[in-house]
Length: 510
Image 1: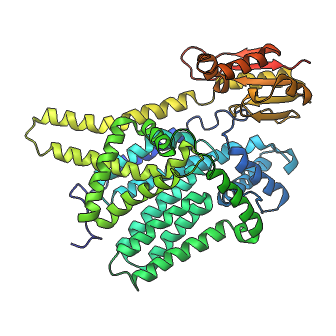
Image 2: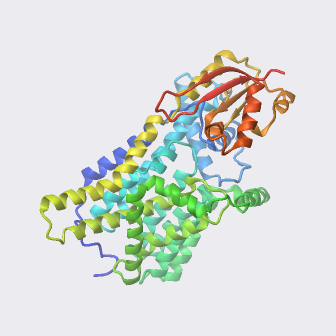
């Protein structure tokens, strides 16, 4: 039996009905409350992508002049925005580009991210089939309910799309290993190129087809040809998807240098690796983390001893390298770890199914054994699922909506508003709205000097200091001094049990 024909000793019958239920559940979690927060509350970087896509649509200038991200997902959203505009024109929503407002495009844009997130679950299933149907079902189920992935699938950001392309690269690298043809490695490399064109960290995915080519015997015409084909596919796909990397080479080099300065800056107090482990623990919970650890150990043993060495090597090597890569950077956000998640779901599924197989070897009464098997599977999948449902139930805080509506009804259209945090964006009417990190970063005199009329405080920012004034005496004192000199005109407090931010609107009066 060759390595390409080998599978784990498990039931290999396809389960179409179970697969359909998993994908539909994944779609439900990602499309549920998709429009929550629009137009008053946007994801932290959503305007960075949507603003440039809409500017391209209105100007016809396809140079993004922005290189914090490669341009591919901006172009995807440009295409979606054009279709949305044509649909709106046919239904009479507007008669010219100038009539369309930015907030009218966000729902369609978010739907693209949610679709890619759902498709990633399907890819995990097809990858899991290389181990067996039970592995595929457990891995896809865990990916479907993964709260970190569910949450980020609601926003127009690059993290879910790059996770899709990294997972696609994994699948195509496995297929290339099975087929043993250079053209198959070319396609896997092209998927890695699209991952890099979506977000620079996606370039790490090129490791997958390169390692697969090196470990695959009998590649036609040779393993070197397979590796070179993967590199060529990645380069061509990247340049086609992000052409201004070359067409505006000085702009790209300057923008990339500025970006790398941010990533290479001063590290936060907690080590990035510890922070990312905390994010993963919060997503998988302890049962899932224990399963992942077991899957990594099992995978390393199989990668060394076989059988199925290529699959096991790719499943273990990429998450280890990618985790090391992001842990060396100064900028740390939980969503940066998303490309790890499909691999971790596969490894957790390995541990769960291996544990089930181990239980079946003992002479335990069938009822007890069945209960243990159910408890093992549910223990890994249920906690993330509850967390994902909880996010959708609370997504889109009512207090933020109330604040937005109060501003529309009571604040003059030419007023200048400063809002802390990013959980509220000022209405796009004629307000001069600005979001800041924290209101305390400026004094009362600064606000007066800059002609600010209103400020909006959010407990998402000031809350920790008011809850623990003894722990943060300076920050608490700065907020108290600021609030005492302004006139409170509205306050929106969430009901008991709702994890929403309290919002306070102050009038700045010299």
